Image (cartoon, rainbow, N blue to C red; front, side, top):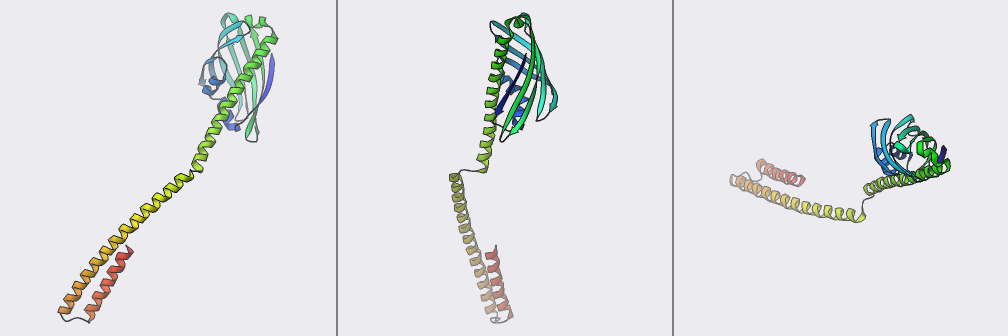
Length: 234
């Protein structure tokens, strides 16, 4: 049995590639998948229950990734056993091509079945396989596109903050700045007043000593001026 298909996934190629190698994503998208575990970077074990016509079987098998060329293509091969229902094995070549802000996924698959499954006829097997592929890629596309959209929304939230939030932050900053200026002005006024009182004391002391108008007096006046300037500067 040979089968091929093409799907456009509205997500960047790297996101699609990563999802194709994520066991949790694959498990959620594969119809009837009960478990899917990565046992090595290139191999996974799977457990799937599937119904093909009147035959319902539980398959367990191993999936291997080969010819890996990230993020462009790889080959996936596998073999599953379903007890008395038979077995299935095969592989698929998967290719990812960038298409604007999306990705075109194309695949070519080949498979072989045996046991009761082989007795159902190729037409029924082909139609069931195509439906499973459509179901898989339909859900896969939704999951990957949803994840990409969520990431873009998060980036938008970070780069474009709410205008009301910005306005509130500005108001708070202005209020706090105003309060800081008032406190600083009060502090400076107090320090200047104290400096003036100290200078006046020095002047009175100098006058009592008869040095009013002399070098000591003018030195004290200059000292008072320097103290005032320093207070304002701080």
